[in-house]
Length: 318
Ligand SMILES: Nc1ncnc2c1ncn2[C@@H]1O[C@H](COP(=O)(O)OP(=O)(O)OP(=O)(O)O)[C@@H](O)[C@H]1O
Ligand SMILES: Cc1ncc(C[n+]2csc(CCOP(=O)(O)O)c2C)c(N)n1
Ligand SMILES: [Mg+2]
Ligand SMILES: [Mg+2]
Ligand SMILES: [Mg+2]
Image 1 (tube, rainbow, N blue to C red):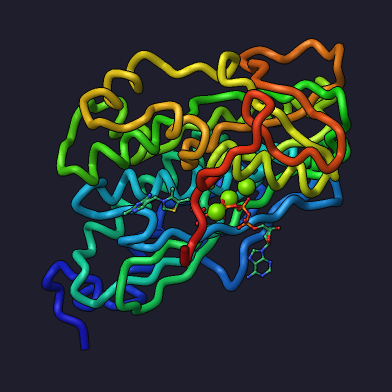
Image 2: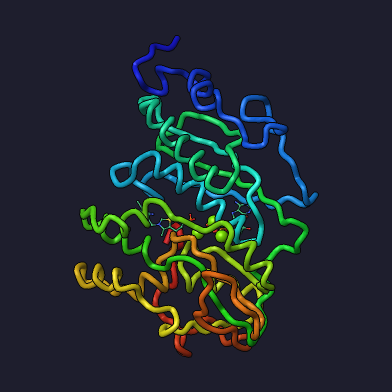
């Protein structure tokens, strides 16, 4: 028995499914879903790029910091950034949501609106999902992508002498987290960077087209994620702070909070910028900027030539 009191329990599982699926279709009308037992997608390349990332209330977002729409957008964005980091173009997104029964149904529909908005920004839709009862709001997204006939750009292709470059903002989400954690709500552009990353999904395929030798999206922190590339590639990476730079806005926020803005830039994560390596004389595609170089094997991850002794980024359970 369901009573429509505006909660998800009141609407019931199937009422909620109807609400979040009716009149929602993938942009390509020859495909199917959401609404049946499974979606039908196209796989133009035969190979399919697949990735999944989950967001948990209190760990990745807080509903008193972000609107449900922003949480939905972030959940999709962090996944599409992983698709882009392989050099691929998104083809679809699937979402699984868990929430308590007293969650307002409007929260779920706003979350789904955010997911569709971000998926649409990448030219795709939400082709399927799941809804379950859970103690806390959890949002799990799977994104698929297409390589367009090109080889994937992996974490393991960096070679000594390569240029290290990034595309997108660094340190903004971490600055926003510091602001929110201290109970402030401004500057709005800094706080919004924490709420919703804005990856440019064309930057990954552009880097692949320009011959990128390795690539990763920056979820945990620039140094932590470049550390994954260095390890996978069996090389060292040196990041130059004069090339990375610190945006004036972050310097201002750092001064106001008594925090080091360079630390946000180097170790912040969650902006989902892309980092890639390119052959020494490659011309970097639009929006990519040089921040360092690939060095010889076993020299590790260095900053201005020195080992970095602080924490290099986010790690769950630490
Ligand atoms: N539970 C798991 N089972 C199988 N593979 C996993 C599992 N957790 C992570 N992996 C794999 O390990 C690799 C690294 O995972 P990780 O979650 O760090 O990647 P990421 O999405 O790029 O980073 P982030 O989670 O910070 O966004 C990926 O290939 C991922 O698929
Ligand atoms: C409420 C709240 N507390 C802390 C943080 C910071 N944070 C959480 S996960 C993560 C790294 C990426 O996660 P993953 O590796 O799971 O993709 C970071 C930097 C936040 N966003 N919200
Ligand atoms: Mg990820
Ligand atoms: Mg990643
Ligand atoms: Mg991570």
